[in-house]
Length: 130
Picture (cartoon, rainbow, N blue to C red):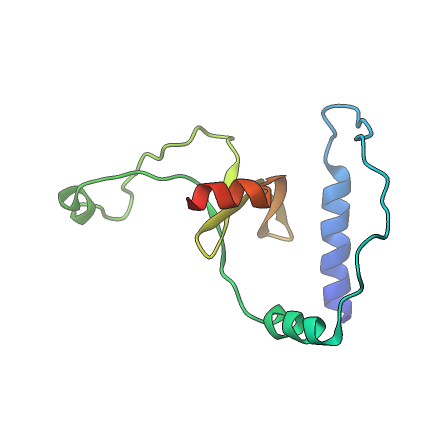
């Protein structure tokens, strides 16, 4: 890791540490973990490795709106488009167009980032596909 990368990582860690926790953290009830899974075979590992480097597109959605083509063509610099979200509401985190989480914008070293506040479970994502 280069010195610049380390500095950026340190800045992100410092920014995250500065965030105020609104409520006292409570331990979540968790089931006891047991090692009942079978180890991954070499063939399964090769299959998994083959997809690990596939690029995906992550986008953050502030909000949406629908307008007519007539109004779209009238937009110019300085135009304001009203969205369906309230200021301060969480952003949608999309991977290849599929909602996977909600988050809030953070700024570190004059760059935008997003802190995930709620991750959508796999079962919820599957339900939305139907």
